Image (cartoon, rainbow, N blue to C red; front, side, top):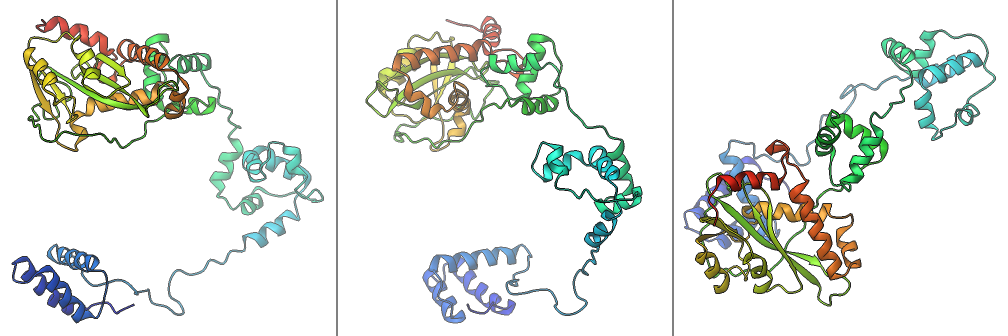
Length: 416
């Protein structure tokens, strides 16, 4: 490996890099100069990246001197002094003076759980067999502390502290609520559910501990990369500008999600098209189809009752840029807004719903969905969306469900 460059040598290279920035020399010429100056024949991309990063540090006032190969001073009396640990020897000396009664007291009253854990056993008798039985004479607390290597205050705290067997309060209600929600709620949402249904107040952290004790774990969402064809030739402005709560406009959002095919469908996927209302988070309409075409999105959108003025937010899917779809929206006094290309976060509300559906509808979604027929899957999705709209309350909206918010908002707005 070649030597590290000095500061003065880097300053010379920076002069050439400035010439490159001023278009006086090409990138290739800069790399050739670097190689001839340093005699290092690395990959050209890595050379340019190194020069660029070093120059950036130099401009920020950071040190450009390499730290590679440097080490602290070596020799005698350098570094942290070694500990003269005689604990093992002291333990052996004190253990020779222990009586059986002392060992029993030490095990039962002080470190019972720790010893069982160390020997990977739940039976105290099994552990005692592994401990010396032929020890005589009394032992003071001070010697016990030295054996265990603990402080005096810690020893007496453990001595007085009883063995904690935490009783799970409201065990029946917690288990019943968890399974009633089909394991879809985590600690916070389950805490609100208990408050709403049983009038039981449990701190989410306490509930989390209870759930761990009872072996209740909800499923979590995992990111999955989405691939689909986009029509980038048709462009509409991103009007809503991430107005996720519909504060400025009456916004609807729609998208199509790919679902692994049920057992009676020959193709690789079926397609779920959904329309969501930003302000209330309600699923207004949806359709499950075997084909990803215009009909799959037009079927439910044409049956939707829109307000007099609204904005519908889309991505660049080919169905949404079709003349049929655009004409229908404009005919109903709607305005089309489109996400920026390759930026799914602009359409966050509908993407968030799809992630909830694929995580909470049933466990092991991508494997289990293949065991149903198309009609069975359609019925399961119907029940899930009904649960989502009418039972899944939201913390940010004072524990109201999407349907409750929808009814409140609908009465205040002008609808066709």
